[in-house]
Image (cartoon, rainbow, N blue to C red; front, side, top):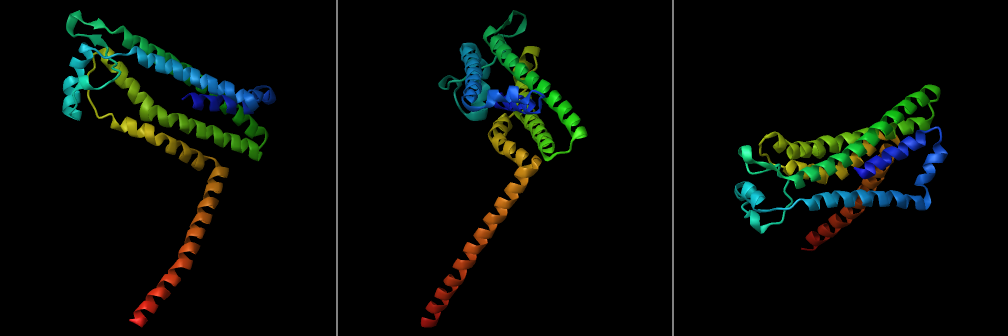
Length: 243
């Protein structure tokens, strides 16, 4: 999510009237600053997860579910539970470590989504304005990059961000449900491929370059197979004739 936000900022800088002023922050050694920022957000995220800890309450709450679905004793594994309350009924108390974790994660996600929305709206306005005044290839390319960023944002949002947030916040509203979360893991694993396919399908230059690459690759494979096959047939016939 951090890298995607940085892409939005960079694309918005390219479309800005003060393009040279803003894009210089992405040149040369200054790129290290963005890597440091990404590392900083990762540390915050990891620190939030470290606040969570398992205990007898979480073990008792999850023991049957884990045993039935995975055949594993909950006390034998290490996990980071997000449990809304200690106990049930009128005497239940809020688990503040879960509240702190969700607060940190929500703040981080809200900040990044807000930046992307602001940059996205600005890019939309600038792209629309520039295309009215000019239909240059550069402006069309920037529009395609903008569309690719939108799709790259929508994909992870609905594949794993939104489902995970629903699951994490539901217990605080006394909503209990159980489902196989494997599709979230599969979606997270497949996202790098989906991300690349989005760019290849939306950006025309990349699409043409990929098509040329595939044509050359197929042509080379056919040529190699075409050279090897006759030689193999000739040797086979020679052996049969000799026999």
